Length: 196
Ligand SMILES: [Fe+2]
Image 1: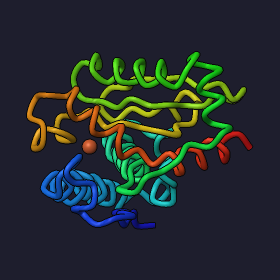
Image 2 (image 1 turned 135 degrees about the vertical axis):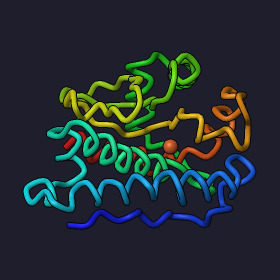
Image 3 (image 1 turned 180 degrees about the vertical axis):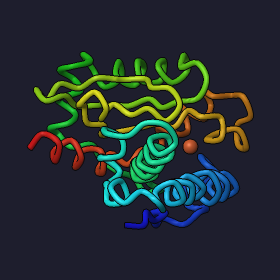
């Protein structure tokens, strides 16, 4: 099974000015595309792993196959979590956030803090565990909470390549603009589907 670069659910310039077309040309068109290409190259002569889904790769593989497979999954989720259109969070997710983080504002603050304090390259996630509890998690490089059995429903890419063209080293500015384009409908649907 050949892995494919996902189709973006919007045009390359659609997230501007929050995230520019130039960033998408590099981040999606070069970085993300290269992970897909490298993954396919690594799987070419591996009969067993060639049929693995990205989830299988994340939970069962190590080394280059893990790194490239997880980066494909992580970026697929990142792009799906964004939208140029206004979107509304579901009542179910909003009340779960209220329950686990006291308020939506506190959640946003804690998530942003996790992003600004993550050292080096990585990802910040909102995850759901098997009991339905939400958590904010930081991971380094390609790592993904699926490895610990928790399901990611929202992710922010805090590798420098996600914001350097638009914001240089001003990560907090990227985060402020990133919040404005989160696709809450997608995140809410994902919350519903992992609870089942
Ligand atoms: Fe990235």
